[in-house]
Image (cartoon, rainbow, N blue to C red):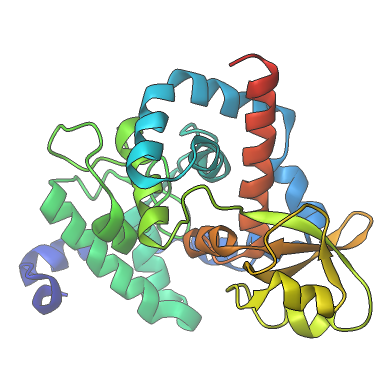
Length: 293
């Protein structure tokens, strides 16, 4: 870590000497919410309280959200929904020391230990660069931190100083959080004014193979139509999409996910996460429009 990030080895040893192994972190890794079927995952995030909270957050921070849309091309509803899903608009940013979470996972979680050790290195480098008290920062059991829950490598690579105070502060600055979410999505290929996902109907037996191709769009709407997959809303026939299959309350649901749906999965690789963001974003925008802004 000292060689990779230009840090003092003694400072690293001192930081690690203060880290604790937390069994509850290892336990939490065995039961992620994304392991649930969509019928159980959706009700966690599509709630009256979260929709109302999103409208309030949007109203409170409208100028920042508008500026982020103008600069990065990401609509307000998506930024609001991601922050809503991640931390309930900043109110639930985690209560586990990030140092402890990353040290526990980096040295005790065999399946992905190398990944979390790298994140631990990024966290120490982040603390040095941004003058952060790494022993005081709290976050999720997986080491994500701040209002938008960035892991350390993402914090270092994509966070922006959106309030102009000279520091990228995702823990205490709502402005930096809003700008950083929009910047992250933009850097990963967000298409300005592009669609996210539309429901689809399926006939024939090609759906399983098409869904198995993954989340990155690589099949045109016209090709889907020839295979018996039809969007329920009008979209351009030459647009590329991916077929998303979800276990809904009434059986299998099919959606066509476009480039922007895929971009949201760069924030969290689960299609359930991306669909929750998409549906929460639409619900918040509809509520806000109905309330007359």
